[in-house]
Image 1 (cartoon, rainbow, N blue to C red):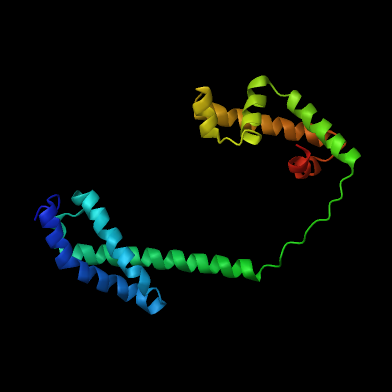
Image 2: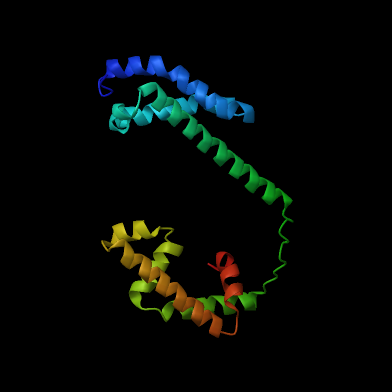
Length: 188
């Protein structure tokens, strides 16, 4: 059977999809995830269609291979759902974050703005441009690299170094860096 041939593949699907569904249901149904069975079967056969070489007939029959892959994929789906459930439970059990009451006067805002502008102006031009494009241009490092024609690693390095220098500059100022960063959105 040549799985690259659409007719042979259709026959293989008709013959082995029920077995794949049974294998997936054996894992997912007891956990109340019966609705994921069709997705698992679909994933198994799409993967086989895209790369039929993943099935090696010398290692065993196609039916056994499809059932094994379906069971494995069903276990992946089940585990990812369990991990998401545990994360949700931990999040629900965690105490809610307490809002911080930050009252910022106009003078503090002006001082923070001045500290931020000093920190930006102390940067070399390439770092300043990269940070401005990322923060105020709302561009990712990849978009900045594409736009400027620079390698992605260069852009990421400029961002990292520039932010580290700004942080050091702001920590040395009278106003704490955390306060400046917290107020950034309302300042600019």
